[in-house]
Length: 418
Image 1 (cartoon, one colour):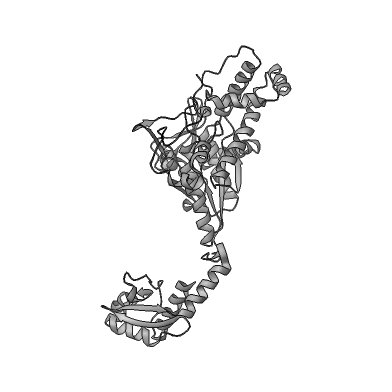
Image 2 (cartoon, rainbow, N blue to C red):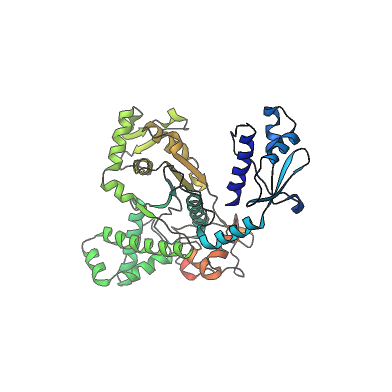
């Protein structure tokens, strides 16, 4: 690349004058084309330290600057700017390198830093991927690619919340719709998922398997069936959007291998845990949180907070040097408590970092559209992609997206069941 080569040439000229190079030599592209291809204010930056006028320093740099293969001409401008004009040979060689390296052109060599894990989207698998989560997908995928281009090993990960009450409700909702499909009366869960996609899932249930599960009152079977179909759909929609992940990390795996219990025991050993009103609490106020947080509910069920701690500690144990999470603004308050728990567990403070990515706001005739996965009122990412394609979808996801029928037509499956 030309920029590193130019910096090295300037650094050689500085060293030839006996001046140490402590910081990166500044380079910029001049606003006026007749000033050259690149310019540097290094002489102005060194004037005070060297004790010479900037133009004298600039002239000393030019006297030792190699010309020929890389630099065709160099001159001094204004108070001491060094203007550089590249040779045609250098430009031709650079074009040949660009063509030869293809998409690898511009990538930096490996830095040797520990890898970075970028977790993004991580939408609950209780419904189709909707446009609200789409922005985080585009940003996260871009960050992974930029890290890799900068020589930093980076992986993208989707955390699957496949444990707990919400996925149980999804399974119960699909079971109820399946009973209706059989013509049997069904008590739909009071807080179940109402979207028509639940009926679509029930229509996919193999009849014999579904009947066998109902006979045994095996709602877990419906939960597993619904989760697998939801995840298949989310993966397919995100892939169509140009977003893929190196790993889909299920929360259930943390429960199965005892990661939550191990983290709870370690937090207890740290002295930052206490019992109150039958529940187990983490004293996060010690680390700047506004209040202490529940780790285990009075019912004996672990909180989502405890699972999140276990998940982030596992990221550290996998050997990553940084965990970069992309969260929505509704999770802003969660940052302090996770950071506090990791600190209590001895994880370095710089390991955990969160970037807040604003949600997409949907407008209809100028009014804010409230979306609810539980009520079945949302616009799916798939619908948007079918209408405008993945590239335009990334452009059309600013702070607010107008979903007037003249611009966007939601499919019936994205509407609530009457």
